[in-house]
Length: 284
Image (cartoon, rainbow, N blue to C red; front, side, top):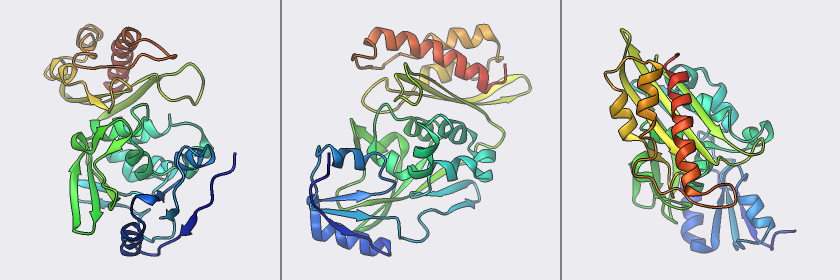
């Protein structure tokens, strides 16, 4: 199907993009990589009067070291982030998660910021961002603000970015030396995750000193499996310890029931995938 007619705006600066948003209001849509927006436009599920393309704004694809954090431009593509040595060294979980996103074509076009703002609960990237305690830099008419990942995902396909705001940067505290793994279950290759688990673990002296575990598609937003994390910290990374901790993966979750699986099936998968992800992250 062909999209309905719309005006196209390609601002050269963040300020110009914000001005375009202010001018066109809720009749405008922001285009990042387009891997979520373009199918929606083609199916006429959304018919904006104006599309604002962020692709010509310099600096929004930069990736930099900022002391205790790495800073990722919101327009950096999945592939650029995945292959960046700073990300591989200091945020390995994001790198390995991005390797599991869709297919090479989408990874070359899709952007980190676009996926995060789209806030699909079955998307993989938000889960990794949540596990890594990412901070989102959001810019609007009143200046910039920083939103923690745990507050960024508000609900189903809803983020904390307002209609007159833009996500410009993602700041990730360095997790240097942490093991990491992303385990997802799908019926078909490149499908959205039925359930996914992001795990990053710091092992010191044969003991799990710290752990972060987050779940994909176990609710309306990405979720931290905090009971699993608490059960792991201070323990030896053995198969028995991890298996016992993983039984708590679904605590407090409200997974959906759909054609891909019932809620109880997803709860079972969460435990299985958590065990696999943590063991791999811990190098067991």
